[in-house]
Amino acid sequence: MAYRLSAVAQTRFDERLILYGWLEDADFSRAMTKRGRLVESQSIAGVHLGLKGGRVSGRKYGYSQVVNAWYLYGKNSISRKEAWRHTLQALAANGVRQFRSEPYIDRRGRFAGNLIGLFHLAIGSSRPERAAEL
Image 1: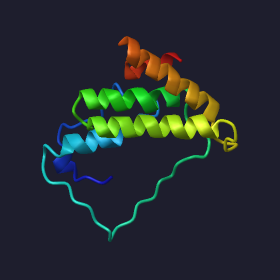
Image 2: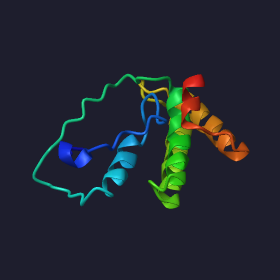
Image 3: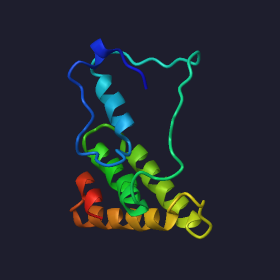
């Protein structure tokens, strides 16, 4: 993502999307659509300096994969279809790959976090900040 500073103005990342901030880029870009037109270019390239080791535990990250999607749906930042897609992709990837996980990804922890997130959604007690408590 790249934005002109003058276009960003007072728009900030949502502080409730803590730790890794799963889907914060989607939320921010949707907020920016209120400030003007977004464009896509194939003539530029970006570099993602991601690390193989996670910044947070698998359980916390897995929780965020589910809960953040539905939190953003509630904010009208993503559609219901997108929230379901993010949730089902996380469950499928983590559920299946937990048995033959990549050495640098805690798939079992992520899947446990996914299930905790689903449980909290079901009982109406999900909050993005809860990831820090896991």
